[in-house]
Length: 292
Ligand SMILES: Nc1ncnc2c1ncn2[C@@H]1O[C@H](COP(=O)(O)OP(=O)(O)OP(=O)(O)O)[C@@H](O)[C@H]1O
Image (cartoon, rainbow, N blue to C red; front, side):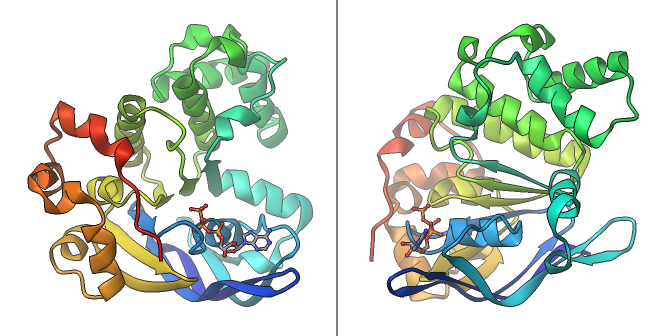
């Protein structure tokens, strides 16, 4: 049962020269799954994410294909048919996003409560004030932040907490799809781990599907059900995480895997067993994907 079908999506940047950033990409996102999207910097991951949610800005142009959302209530929506307020409402309600550095988009002069409440005021105007407050408190607790923090201003929270608030905001309307583009990259590795654990727990609890984008392949292998490997705008391989790790087929996937010493060396144990040794988690920031 798919919740999102991306069909032959192509996106160009029409700048001085034309960049074919996403080329004929087809993917389906199954209900409740975590689909990892891996690939080196510049391969088109973010463009694809923005394209799915129709948040692209010029000079980006969708040159072909479509994205269809299949609601759990049984109807399909072709996202290209939505515009304006309908599209904005749809985005928060059905497909929500958390981007890298999202935590910096909190308004510094408003308390967390006001910013969370705003989502409900706009999208759930039927809720009374007390109910709205309670929903906000529950949301914060859901992402592991104490409800007392509703009264805090963003600068009074750590980066990890602010990113949790952004995740809470994305989950406010119980979307069926969550698109996360490097949501934890700006955070230190310990906080990153805690948040990832939270996301996988919430996914089981609430049943939303996740497209999780990062260049950090070890991390994807840990949390994803399936992984798509992207290179130069194309999906070159797509498989379940274990198969992709144990039997990569595309030479680029093999190269990507081998560029993470922790996957191929002795310290790769955490991927194979799911057990994370503390010293392993602390070293992952040093790893980079080989370019080219
Ligand atoms: N505004 C723009 N104008 C022109 N080209 C762009 C623009 N934004 C991105 N590109 C190009 O499109 C391609 C894909 O970029 P994109 O940001 O989607 O890659 P990415 O895989 O998300 O990279 P990263 O991991 O660094 O965010 C790159 O070649 C990039 O240079």
